[in-house]
Image 1 (spheres, one colour):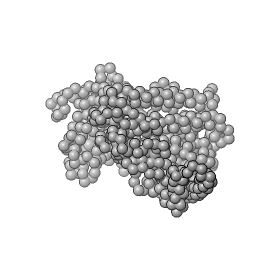
Image 2 (cartoon, rainbow, N blue to C red; image 1 turned 120 degrees about the vertical axis):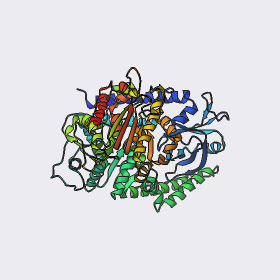
Image 3 (cartoon, rainbow, N blue to C red; image 1 turned 180 degrees about the vertical axis):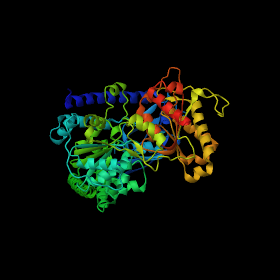
Image 4 (tube, rainbow, N blue to C red; image 1 turned 30 degrees about the vertical axis):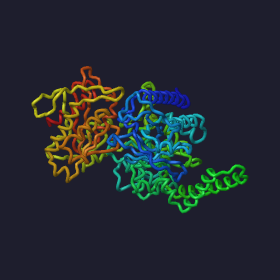
Length: 638
């Protein structure tokens, strides 16, 4: 039998493989992919305007960057990601592959993004005056070494660990029973029985508990209640998630519950409510901050105006530095002392601000989307671990096929669910979907255990409406009420850019228009019925967005319609969901649509109406899609 150390050594080797794969892919992308392509993918802004520079509250040099063209393209810049600045060697506004890019000799880190404005932290040595005066300057995502370094470090520490961390490691990798407290169950009148059971399971756990939350079952509500109750027994807890957006979401709900949260790392959902509980904003609002700022300014000026032969320079500098450190420690102690919840991403938990901090309990939200190595980063600071998520929805992103096949995609949550089913609590009542939409997902993924709440069971937009439809593009006949021309076969666009099905994209919007006409414009606008158009392929999403902009009919509804990939809709819901499956070929190839967890996410975003467009002949060669197609067809005959 494999020991925990051997299993973690294997994890480290697979992570090394993933690291090398991603690094090589990034190098090839940077060297071979033209600038126009990178801009179109949202991985670069060019040209940009470099704005003012300043020192932030953490004493980091920052510079503002503004995107001036291609502002409609969704970009991938977000807090914490490393970036590189470059300038284009000639004046052409038509970026071609042959263009020579000159990179500035430093790497920056994104500190804040809002639309087409970004703030980047740069080293003090960065040539900002050159960049501000240069033309044709751009910025692109750089390879993220830091996250990998932290994950490698975490795995190394866990393998060497003794004491509590060593105990948790051995527990998670074995069938050994997790320890629990025993007390009479607490009653929570505003939770349903399975949510109540999950909160009690969290409170009883000495080592580990798992809250398994299928779509729409109120996982966040349950987790917030579990955190609230835990804080009646502990002074402070650590709350983490894989993405900044997931951390923001749980933080916002905790603040609404009246719990003081300190958010380490900048929020992506930028509004005053979110900013008010960030570390930076609290730090700046502290009464001692102005004095600290003045001392830091004096340090910078002393460095700049240092005179040769100044014997007192070192004394002055040391005195100022000691005073600044003393003030910073005092402010930090007060900020951390007042907070009951420290919230950050898994990688963000390695922040130097948390050095030396220990917590009784760690809550990891969206644990099924995080690599195991990332989960070990915060676990080393804690005595017990509570994981929440759904391993039947989106998995972690793994680029290396070999690493994925060898098991890198298996999360810590899945490992614990397999080894310790007794610590898992499945939330069984969902509050989102009409029963017919929910039933297929419940039967296939959750052994039929998920049930609809009475208030949503029969929810629909139109009387006698069929909640789910599948429009089979392989069976369409011209002249049967469809205005779409052309063949519904998929096309391949560019290297690694994805697949596209233009006729299906047009039919998607035509189908939505016909459904809107049945509902009526006035009702859609007055009730603000919202729509999600989902495609698993990024190229199809971009094509759908461009078509939507051109369609005059949808102008009035533009604010109500979102077009995105499955990953972009994780955690969201809409009244109406339309899915364009894209795949249509003679071989029955469906690529990564074989990962059924993605389809589980897609079909469970809909509250009242789900429309699927796809080539049934291609898709139904796979048993899942055959069952889904038969399920939808049976609905018509009922």
